[in-house]
Structures are given as structure tokens and as C-alpha cells.
Length: 359
Image (tube, rainbow, N blue to C red; front, side):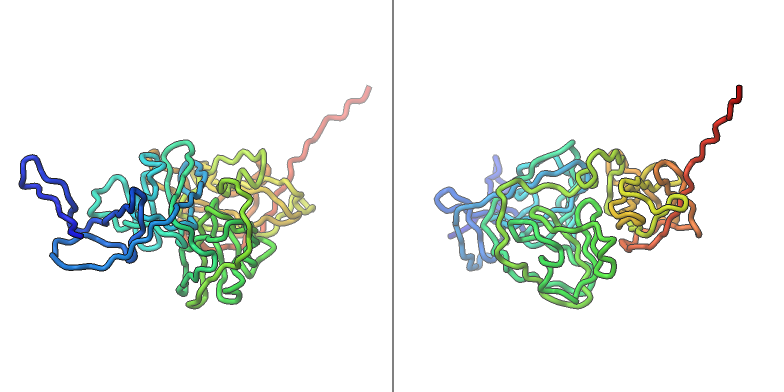
């Protein structure tokens, strides 16, 4: 089957493919997946592209404004970024993958992220209040092996239902150390009681730090509840918590013990992290008496419009506990290191001295 290129010298130009473009196939009007994906070149050569036209399945992911760490369990027939994210066209301006960036504000030739695939995770920056992303494609088997290299891996989630972190990652037990989820949720095998990431969920993306090259295979058998996949947000974990933090890709993490006066901090104690400009760049609520779990502390994002406030490299960190300044034994400097730092806190409660009136 000949596939013709564009002839821009004609008047009017004759439409066709352009050099390096991904070819989209339809079979009886239905989108078909080409294996392998076929990119057009004016080479007058024959190329084998096996086509699979199967009923498409959909996955719906609810996105809050700004950065989202997402993944999907269906393989789109056309993997180009613009095609995969067609349901939210015009509502996002930047997509990051482990090996590339797609930016709406740069010419296509300079976009290093071209395709999106199941089994991988991506950061997507939404520039509207919220959106419902619909991904359509062929279902990917939950037990599809995912290769991991030593270090941080941007990994997608394939099961159709939520699973505890240790259950989902049982196949790589002993070969991973940390997992970062959406909303700054964090799991560290060394500090399970401080970990805020308890479950892995459909629609969410993850960054997994592997201690060696290994292969992740999710367990089969998890059943979907049939609900849209929900974002993991700090506010969702703490109903009623008014936290003005807009998280960015730049972050460090704090955790540790917490006392108020001579007593252990009770459940519900509110912690905030402030920049030198007074901006709140991190917050959490105590869920276990006398300690606070991993709290993401975000850095500034000047690429957003308007810029998202946060820390700048080398700035000192200041903390408040229930509105009171917390005492630090030593100065703590913010770094964009994606690393947990133990910081034990003590806050002195306010004391009220009332006058004694004698008649």
C-alpha cells in the first residue's frame, strides 16, 4: 500500500505525510494499532506493519489543576502526545516523561517527548481548574513485565484496582527503596511508619527507586470498582485541611517526631513549611501521635504562568506548628533532592496569663 508524502510545490499543495511523521491507520473506520509503530520517510522502500483493530477500552482520570503524575493501563492506537491527550486539548501546556519533554510553547521539532505509552508514568501540567482525561486504547495485561534500571524509574500502574504498595510491588521486594506518588505521597522501605503512600491506584503514576536492575510484574486478580480514577491530593487525605500549597516537580521531604511543650503532638496537629518570602511550600497533618509522616516541600516553578511559588535552592526552611514557630536545633537548607530528611520538631504552646481580681 503506497503512502504518499505531501507535495507543497503544487498549487494548492497536495496533502500527504511529512518526513518523520507517525502514520495513523484505520481498518473499516476504526483506529488500528501498528506493530511496530511506523514513521513515514520518502524512501520508496517496503516496510512491514502488522495492524491490530480491536474494540477500544477507555480509562478516565480526573485531573486537578497544575502538575499531575499519571499513567494508564490501555495502549492508544496512536501514541502521539496530542492524540493520546486529545480529550483535554488546549488544557495542558507541558508533559514530562523519564526521557523527554513536550512543551506547548516550543516548536514541535524541539519537543523531545513525542509518544505516550501504557506502563510508564508522566507529569502533566494542567492550565485549567480541572479536567477529565479520557484515554482510549487496547487493554494491556496486568502481568505485563516492566523493566526497571537502577535508580529512579517512571513507572505506570496496570492493575484495575488499588493495592497496598508492598502487595503491588511484591515481585521486586528487596530490590527497591523508595516510591514517589502523586501529590507528594511517599513510601520508603526503611521508614514504613512514616510513609504517606499506602496504596497504589489506577490512573496514578509513580517514580520507583530501584537498587538494581530488575523486572516489575504486578499481581493479577485485582478487580475494578468501576469508578473513575481519582487524583491523590493532600486535601483528600485530610478533609477540611486548608493547605494553599500547589506542588511542583521540585521537592525534598521532611519527617520526624513532634512534641508540643512536654507532650506528644496529638492527631490533627497542623504543620506548615514557609519560604523566606512567607509562602507556604509544604504542609501536613499529624495522623500518628508524636510524629509526622513524609511531607513534600516544593520548590518554585518559574515555567508556569503565573509562576508557582516555592523554595529556591539554598534557602533556609522555617516551620510552623498550629500557627506557632517551631524550634530547629540546626539550620535546614532546601535542596531539590527528592530525598527524605529526618527533622524532629518541638513547639512551645502559647501561655495565657490572666489577671487575678480580688474584691
